[in-house]
Length: 108
Image (cartoon, rainbow, N blue to C red; front, side, top):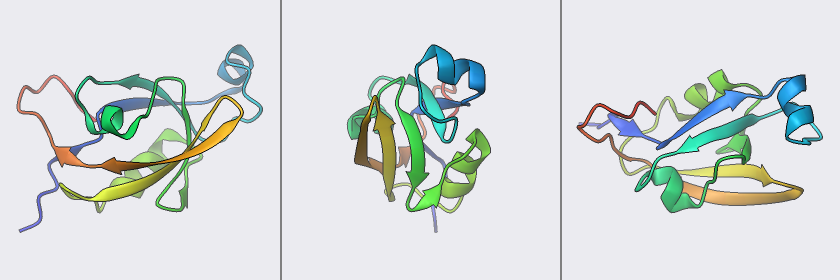
């Protein structure tokens, strides 16, 4: 069986002109990481709030729905290559999907 009850451990939000100006971003492409949960796959990967995700496994991320599409076929234990911008630097990290915690408090 394939276990698709995984989580990323982060929440993201779209980047509009206003938030791009506020955070001094050069583009509105990608999604901004809004929150990273403690002891989560995103935290283990080194993803931080404020990072801008521009691709996942080579799939361009232009809006928040693209994140869901990029990980749709994921499963517990899968490793995803996440390309992100942190300030003016581009960084690539590996996000390993883990079993969703049973607490029900987290959703991504």
